[in-house]
Amino acid sequence: MSVDMRNIEREAAMVPRINGATRWSDMKGGVVRRYRVRTRDSHPQRGSALTLVMGTFALGLAGCVGEQGAAPTLRPADSAIGPLTVTPLNAILAVNDTMQIHVSVQSLSGAALSSVDSVVYQLANVADSLRIRLSRTGLVTAIAASGPGSPVLVNVLAFKDGLVRADQTVLQITDTAIPGATLSIQPIAPDSAKLTVFSNTMLTPVIENTTTDESVPGPTLRLEIRPGDMDKVGYYRPYITPPPNIVSLNLIDGVGAPLNGIVTLSHTGTVWVYANVLVYGTMLHDSVQYTITNGYRGSVAVGDQGSLALVLSGQMNVAVSPGGVVAFFNNMSLDLNTTVDFTFDVPGAATADPDGDGTSGNILGLPGGGTGATRQFLTPGTYQWTATVRDGIAPYTGQTVGGTIVVQ
Image 1: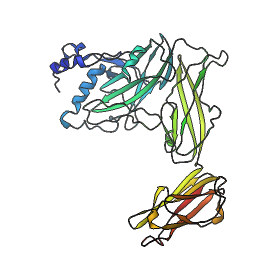
Image 2: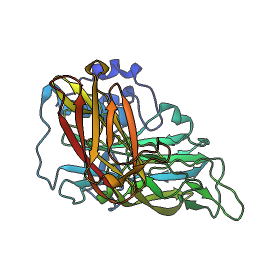
Image 3: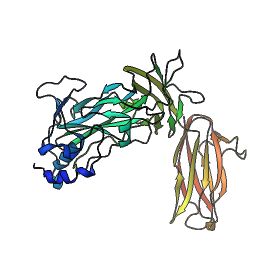
């Protein structure tokens, strides 16, 4: 592959200088400077070192890998690039502290990769060059405090055979170090370790010396969970902007939770959430076990569409915790003059909503236009509901639709 250095130099003026990256024009005669970087699991040896190419130039060369739609080089699983992990995931530094970001890369078969084509360290926010210096080998030097809730994000990208993997380190800089600091991510009242499905929770990490009451202001962390719990909890995983012109990408994608946050999904049960932070050179750990239950509110709605009565909003199958309240709605158009009966296979399980109209059991003659009624379900179990269209005009009269209410 050839590289036209005239094009590179023309683009030099458009590339900002960032700590840890180098202008195109710094590459005299097209020479790429290479550096050995130590991986977490190995020491640099001849033929096994990771190759580091200066940030901006690495992205330009990597773009050539897939130019004109060429496919990336095919490799067996034991040599194809797989997951990339940075260490530490989180770190707290004092001004003038230094820290090395370590990189570990696996193949798709799970074995450690001895080398990749290049590794690039980048600031996610160019303005953070005022807070840290980031070398081309991943060495961080803290130069100014970052402030609470305003972390410095460092992206790490590894390239091999036309593919790229990425991860991110989260840093916070304080003016001075706090000796004897400890870490806690335990819930602080009124928060608790009991959550409901489809809810968002922000943890409050505390890094402090409990004797002197000195603390890190507003720590912001990447949290971790076990792989087997990914069906229960979503957590922060960074979206890292892909380099241009790369045909095949495999970067970390965002999963709907901010730093310090988790979002519960559709599964109930227990889940452990972990925090690991390098604090002024000492690795601190904490974890909290959450219990995830069904929520206490649900809804079912029927409406008209064409010649059918359908469940339009809410769900056909609803899950609530014991004591949960389910609302039932007739959303059919008023001009159809329909009423709907909501009946249950166990009418006695549908008790009166304490905040409702005081009625219990089957719901009969519910008018259209969005009229609703509520029932509370106290006893665990699975109950069938059926909605039947009454009155009104054909073809709606007599149509039914149904579902379940799971109380657990």
